[in-house]
Length: 236
Image (spheres, rainbow, N blue to C red):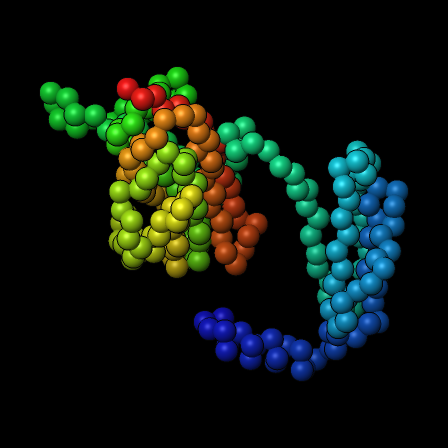
């Protein structure tokens, strides 16, 4: 719906007509592995509950989940696995909404400015100018998409101002935060798009450059991220 007020009106219309969606006539039976989930408490009205397991409690058999909804009231939920990993060890994913990240060092030679791709084997030096290139691909028209690019602590963005930009035929809002650069798209038509921004290297060390994530705000199942990148910066 086009606005918050319109959404509220639509939800009210759905809940105040037809079947009573808040009726407790149905029950959802969930079995994870050999265990039936029996929550100690549920949220009044919606019946919402959350069940978590620690890593020591997770077993291979829990990969088999059976759900049975009794009654004619709607029910929905999600099952997800959450864990922590070093940013530079994260593997990339591919999906219908996809993003690729590349780092280039800007050099000036006899033929003018050149971009040399950066790898872990090609260290940077303080004062280098780096171009961050983000390639976005989508196989369908999308709305309200967020692109978040994490930056290494040694990278200082050239453009510090937030604002609306137009590039590749799309309009987006770009903002730089302490550890990331973010793009917000109201509309992202089907196609391939390349976005670039520049940073300067301002300190010595070994850094994780994080990952780049793209996700639909209202359909979060459309998401993907790049692999983690590690960079090395020498003093000279």
